[in-house]
Image (tube, rainbow, N blue to C red; front, side, top):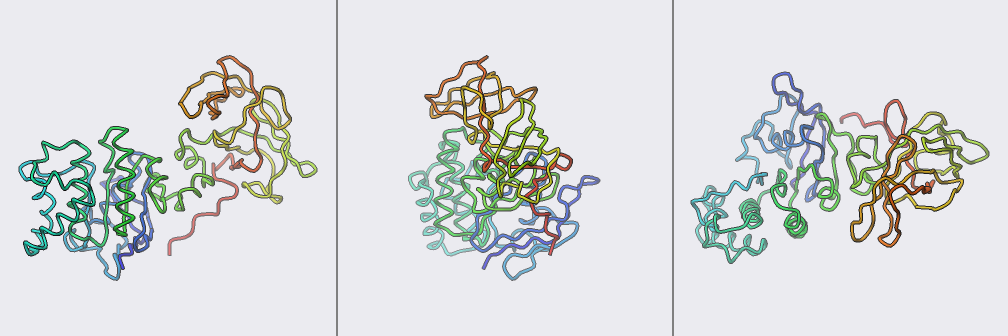
Length: 371
């Protein structure tokens, strides 16, 4: 078992409270992604798990061992850094074998495990070369191979793809997901790229200002963000938000928006059930859930097309709704022109309602108290 349990962890840098009372469990063989903007504390938390930073309060357990005070070499973990951190004077074989030789493994075992790791990463033809003769993507594969060769209980990865170009990042993302699915190693992966998080992780923990604000399956976080920050951070483009004045009449909603007033069916879910109070709220809707109409409809808000971005498989529209700007996705063959007046249809079952004062979703449960 290689379950990770982080319990009430705090980390300070002088007066900066980098990690604030974080409690988190990563199940055995689970792939957890720590996601958040720069400076949110995700890398600090990862380094605390690795033992590269000493926690100021709280505890960390890996399996049945309390590792809070143990040095990194005794935690049975391996780490892949943002920089490739390969040794330029060593061959690829020697780089991958480095950790095994530090563990004083027999030469035959070293050769076998290096070969196995290289084959998993498709770099077996590079073993006799030096890293200078390898591309950036190949060097990142070397770093991953070195980490998995030692057979760690836990694999920690700190933005390992951020230095790669877009096309190579896409390729490596799929390769890493395949590899980790085969290895079944408990993995914690840090990134600020929400596409990586959504496509790779079994679970995502979204961090902000040193705390975990939402921890759930990727699609649950995408469809049901706990607050405005998560909805605005997850997704490309991010969720649209509009100030709304909501009245409930005869099982329907009358919603005043910056671009006009719409009449909607009152959904049983989506955060505005029968018992939810009307009033001054925030309406959230994803760009792909908006439908473009060419004439007025009771369930559509009027807007003016400002920008049309053809993206091949679809078009991305920027639409002015009153003083607000929203994004809408349309089919590639559904044309619009800047300056055109259109109506954006709001599907009641796809809307997400938030409290205007707190920014929290009405359907979101309050954060659980640390165990």
